[in-house]
Image (cartoon, rainbow, N blue to C red; front, side):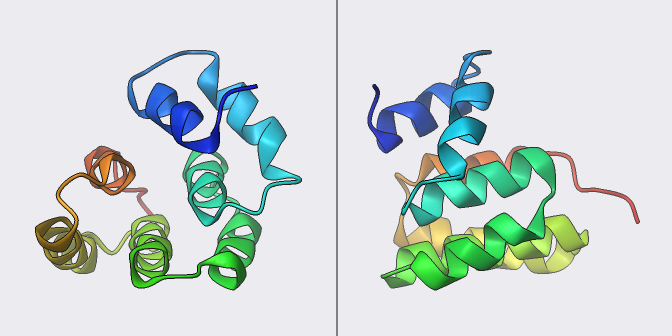
Length: 106
């Protein structure tokens, strides 16, 4: 079984099997990042609620807020938050992946 980070990298890299594996793992994970990715794939804010509870450091908490802004369709806020987040964490591929996904139209 791949680690959470390996699975997230596969998802971001476009591995077609990664989405299904990630969604299966979301039901039992204690990883805020996996739950954020699951929320982005399904638009299920329940995943974000669990991610918010599990986020243990500023990087994870910021990731949850990025996903919330994206799912609300707040492109301006997302742009500001992503720029700030990636300035502090330039290696955070999941945050960059969120920023590159189409913004939902409400």
